Image (cartoon, rainbow over all chains, first blue to last red; front, side, top):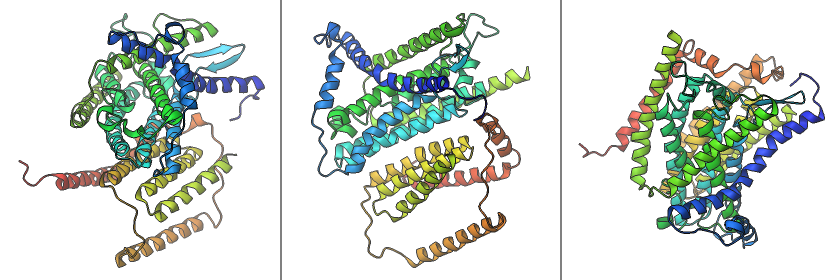
Length: 353
Length: 170
């Protein structure tokens, strides 16, 4: 690495930068489950969990204690190693995606330059897709190693679904990469600062020129996170509980946790790629105050998309398998390709001026 | 430190590639190959080619092997039986591959003057050739190779289409 001598403070900053999001992400899941259940109840016109603690806030911690203390059943006919490995793989994939997402601007604290991002990789976008493409193994392995037909069905559905939607998702995100001219997520955020030249009141977010790309990306994100209306791998009406039928206690909880972390990460990625990340037009604060403001803006935008995830879950019914495939291959992929052409045209127009 | 991780990853790639060939259960063979590819990606990162590493995981581990797994699970292929499934042609092709590979290894050793290549100079991650440079090469010097590969893929695509098409379809 070279450069100036690395002091203890630098190490502390690096550790905070990297560890803190990794610990906070699962911690956010606890209130998120409560929010989801309360919003679900609101949409369905019923009270929802409101008994444990004020407003039912302690319901999630109580559930966690339950999950940790329940008996962990391992089916006798399962493939033990893979059965035990799969849930941790799910959490690993969900957590490590966030490592490259910038959650705030670069701040200066007491002479130290601190970029608020876990690791600013030059291949940031590709890293995210690489890890999410591995997350399918957690589901497929769970389905196969359980040695149970419902689990296997879930695993097979999941592999087909994720391959189909990954294509559309990556093609849509390629438009953002082309607009920024970089795979680095901090570059992508930096490119979205300020406003358009022709329309000074519109922030220069990627969503405006690439609204089609955004829609494709966001719809695919639902499929990648196995959320309704794309939760065919666990379709409880047909497959008992799909790929995690045989899981109990915290191993089941791991899939639960991974799903919610994935929802947060997908929202954070949507914010970063299409909605300017931590930046807000007109908000220019220096120093640590700017860092804090960036963090809050990023959290607010991400929270908004998390709410959309919950809202959609209780609005749309589940797709049928053939509908799923048709939407992915015949609608989303052509739209993503059209978006790519459009962005390429915009880029050429931009350079020719 | 980097050398240590590189060696460990390279060893892991080889060991799991061996497990993939030796394994009797198709699902476990695919999984061994996934681990092998992942370890290979780690070596790419340490060889200062993070872009190739990411592609390795996205394309091979993330897409192609998932498809393998999908097909194996869909067809419900059981463990391979140990009794004589080997045809003479397999033995022949296998030995040809071994000879060619050994020749390649030998040629590499000769070209490097009989000793292993030295470690590359430590380069800061920011001065690496970026994907744009790779793309420029791909679409200029190596355009012919690139197009040849795409024709090959197109042929595979057409072949798959012909196989999957129903005869009585309009």
